[in-house]
Image (cartoon, rainbow, N blue to C red; front, side, top):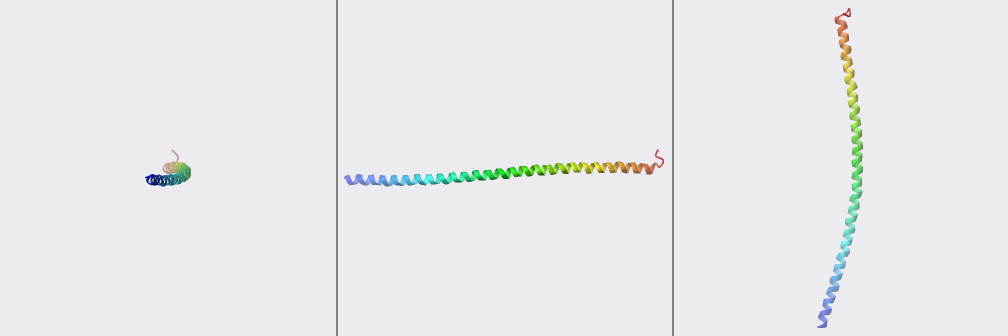
Length: 99
């Protein structure tokens, strides 16, 4: 009779051992998860840096566009000046006396 009880105790011990191992595995997995998270954090950081780079580049692009606009304005201004000058020239040709 006593033997049966001892057998049960041993199976509990074995099961307890299994549980402990499971817990250790969980700890290890938790560690892995934590490391993954840290990697994500690092990657998130990298992602943020990239994003900031895009923002900076976006700023640069916008700056370029604004410069193009300014240059476009200047070009348009020049064209308008030419048109005005053309009109003056044409006017002179039409009215040699200037009247």
